Each structure stands twice: as structure tokens, then as C-alpha cells.
Image 1 (cartoon, helix red, strand yellow):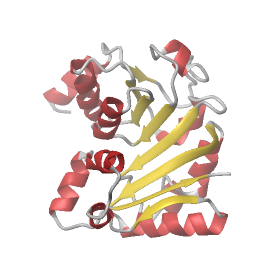
Image 2: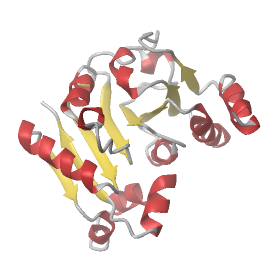
Image 3: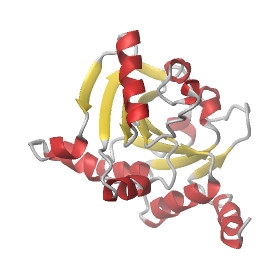
Image 4: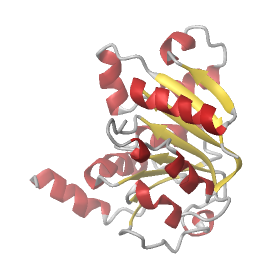
Length: 222
């Protein structure tokens, strides 16, 4: 392991806006995130597989009336988002280092309002491991509020098509679907939506520069 990674792993242990947890060890914050972690009780939004936390930090800046939690297992990536949030003095965003496989262990019933899946691993050979699969949707159901929203943003045809198949198969109500996000934004009149989609992850920037079509869909689960 490189020296920089070791330094980042050590650094995040000192960050007040980062929690680390092992496998299947429920957090004390479960069901009490607004009470024990955030300064102010507000709707909670998760970014699963947040990487460097660009979306979590960007949305926290844009929506001070919501609380955001970026979740990833890669500590050296979380370090970047956590440091950015600290430097910007954002009190409505935090990070949790854990595997998404155990996500339901860390949030209580009806505790979360929205979930963002930003450029998740498409898992070409393991469809059940895709974060929009039925397996994961059932995990989200344990803590997502009724009518809570799942957002999927990806450059992967495999993941997008799979997600649309899951939506049709289980009749999840679709809120918005943009098979070519950037093309649709050229005709978008809502400045808030333009602002939200102007936030780009590290990978999104790379993929878009290579000519990949970015896709987006949001839906609720019942």
C-alpha cells in the first residue's frame, strides 16, 4: 500500500465527519442520525458508492435544508470528500466507510428520504450485485421512507437497461427518465435541475470526455 493511502487512512480516523464500521456491526447512529450525527434534523439523502464524494458535497452545498451521507468502502477516496466538506465548513454532510452490502444495518425504519446511485459498478457477470437489483432494493426498503426516491446516474448501458427492466418487472413508479441526460439538459428550463446535474463525479467527467452517453432515471419503491 502506498504512503499516500496510508496517510489518508490515518487522517480519516481523525475526521469528525467520517464514521468507520466493520461488517455487520450496527452503528449507534442507526435510527438516530439526525440526533447523534448532524447538527440539525433534516431529510437524509444517501450516496451509495460515493467515491470521492463529489455528489454528496456538491448537493450539501446546494441544499442546506437536507443532510447528506456519502458511503463507500474505499477510505482513500472518502478522505477527499471528507476533507473538502471540512474545508468548506459544511455541517450537513458526512461520510460512512462500510460496504453497501450491509447498508440496512446502519439506518432505521423510515430514516432516509432519497438514495443516489452515481456511476455504480455495473457488475457485468453478477446482476444480483448491481445496486438497483431487487436484492438491494429490498435492503433500501427497510429504511427508505414511503415514497422515498432512488436516483440512478450511469454511463453503463448494461446497468441502465437492467435498472429499467427491474422498474418494469416490479412496477416501480418512474419519476423521471433521461436516456441521454446532457442532450435533455439542452432543453431544460428548470434552473434547479440544471444545477443538480451540473455536479459531476470524477468518473463522470472521464466517461463524458470519452464520448459516453450519461443516463439518468429516478423512481420510488412501494
